[in-house]
Figure 1 (cartoon, helix red, strand yellow):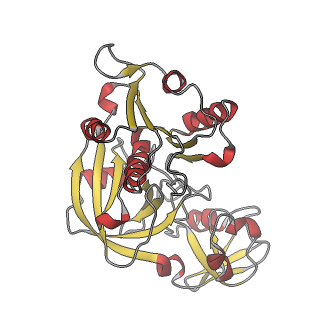
Figure 2 (tube, rainbow, N blue to C red):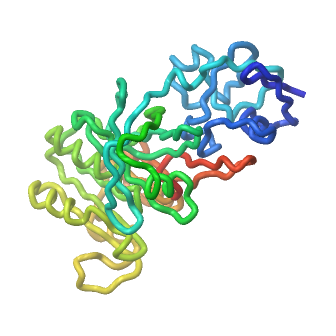
Length: 338
C-alpha cells in the first residue's frame, strides 16, 4: 500500500487511489476543481519518491523538471513525499476590482493581479478563495487592459458563483493559478477565415479572441456564433453588435433553441446555423468553447467539413466535481459549473 506525506503527516492510499482522492477521503483540505487532470488546481510538488508519468501529463517541461504533478492523476506505486509550498509558489494574489451582472445568470468579475500574471486571451485560470475552494474560468480580457475579466455563470447551489454574487466585494483578496489552455489567437495568417462558436459562458474566451484578432489587424472574415437555450441566456449582444458594425469583417450571429422568429436572433440548432452561414470551411481556423457535448459534436462536423484538426481549437467547459469532504470544484472551464 502506498502512502503520501503531506504537511509532515503520512496518509495511506487505497489500491489505485489517487493522491487527491486519498487526502480528501481522510479529511485533508486540498485545493482542487475538475478532478480530471485539466484545471491544474491540485498541482503539488514531490520532494521524494517517484512521480508517475501520467501525473505530469499536460504540464510544462519546466514544471516537470521541478517534480510538480497533478494530485488527481497521481497513483504512486510507492511512498511519495510532497514538499511544503507546492502550487502556492506558482500562485499570484489578486484583488477583486468590480462585480457586474451581464445577464440574469452571468456575472462579470474583474480582477487586478498583485504580481506578474502573463496570459493569452482565451486561456483559462484557476480562481482560489482563501479557504482553498477553486474554480476555473476563461479570460475574456486583453493583456494590455490591466484587469483580468472573467464571466461567471450563476448556478443554484454553485459555491463559488454564489459567493461571488452575494458575498464577495471589491477589495476582497483571492489567488490565481495558471494560465493554461491552447485556445487563443496567434497572428501570422491575417487573411485566414475564423470561425468561433460556443454556448453559455463559452462566449468569454471567444469574446476575447475576437477582440484580440481585431487588435492584431486580422483582415479575414471572422464569424462568431453564440448559442443559448432561450434569449435570456444570451449576453453582450449589444456590445457584439456594435463591434460588428465597426469592423466589416466581423459577423456576429446569436442563436437560441427556444424563441420567437423575427427578434433578430436565429432560432434552431447552432450547428445548422453555422452550416447555413459558412458552408465551405476548408482552410479556416476554428475556436469552440462551452458545453462538452456540443464542442465534441461541432469538432467532428467541422473536421468532416474540411477543417484540419490542427486548426480546430476546442475548450470544453466541464462541470465542477463534488468530492469527499464537500470541497467540490470546477474544472477547466467555465463552468457549466462555476
